[in-house]
Length: 358
Image 1 (tube, rainbow, N blue to C red):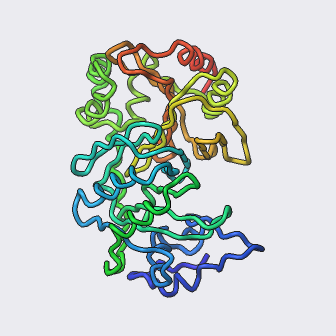
Image 2: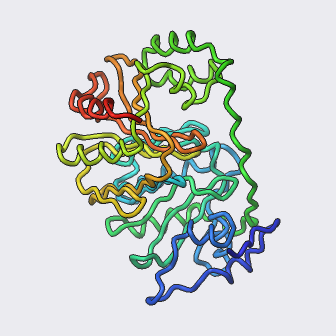
């Protein structure tokens, strides 16, 4: 591997190392190329500013820097939203509607369903690139380490003129070269012996809303997966690592609507609805539907849990996937309507897994 990750980065050398696109050799995906060159993915976009292929957009110099840009996406019509981690890529077609952005956090509700943590966003680019499917434009957002937080792709249904106008309104062509720095590692969980398990169980059972869960974890200073292990099988039960494949295949067969959450540090992207076309290709479990695609690395699943949390209309049940670092990168739920109990077909589907050894 060529390692160009010197400090500061030599963007001219990075640009020279990017292979030209050709019909004989489709261009590598940006994340794969960045890994090959030993640089952050955003460094490719920064290097391509020299050719005009990319332009810097609203800087992340303050917590609300991206608000107007994101709200402006609502005026371009249908796009494709992409959120990914090292283990999962979540792609959803729709419009950016009903924004609620206050300071460094926000959400969009509708077919494009997002939860945004903008305090972890740093850089934005407008990107013109040649992809496996031809030329494509996008807005791409990265954290301080140059890791992609979220991407918004123009499609055939996008208002192209409005997309261009949005870029022009937010372009900052005179922005200085980006500087990337590693993200400090997450704090190691406390030893199990220091956790008051009885108090954890009591507070878990006392929740009235699933949104209280994160505050409860903070109050007990317990990591998410650690809490699963300690709280007891009535609230969290390990299941086989292929549980997610079973859920997708059964949901495809029955047509029941599910919710698919994909996480990274800066964004949660959610699909709600049925899933139809499920294909396994090597380590990748894929959902290949017209308006929703998911690409999930099954070999990156270190543990899988069925988790129950009390809610205002009864327990809410999820299947949660963790990597070897204890990061929850995918959650699956049954489709949920506010004020309605959880769907019985979803509970029945997960019950099929609970008799299997983890």
